Amino acid sequence: MNKTELLIRQQMLVQKSGLLRERLKHQSVVLTKPLWVLDQGKLGLQWLSDHHIWPSVALLVVALLKPRRTLAWGQRIWRVWKTYQTAKAWLLKNR
Image 1 (spheres, rainbow, N blue to C red):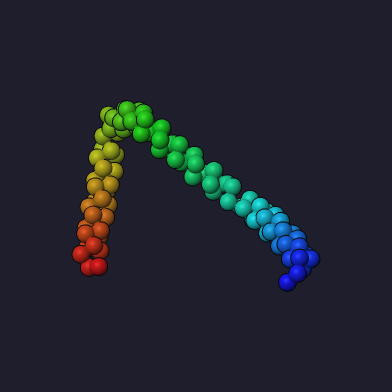
Image 2 (image 1 turned 45 degrees about the vertical axis):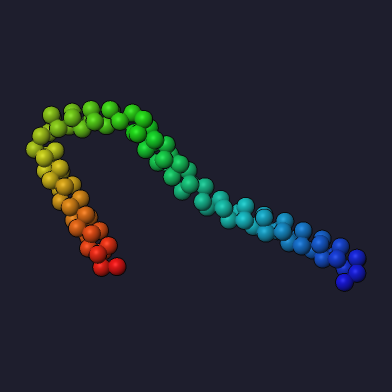
């Protein structure tokens, strides 16, 4: 290849690269909302980690106002947790 062919090829590649970048830009718009939701969830979890007293107080208030419901939900959550632990142990054992 001589110098002019290389320059033409380079221009074609630069043009193709620009088109691909533009296409990627338009296609990535779809991901904006889900990524924003994930960012907000991450910020929410960080806030809960930094201010862990508030969820504890809210749970205590609910437990005092609705003890039967709290106990019922606590039992359900405990059963789900134990089922998860059992399934996890079984899966790890049967690898």
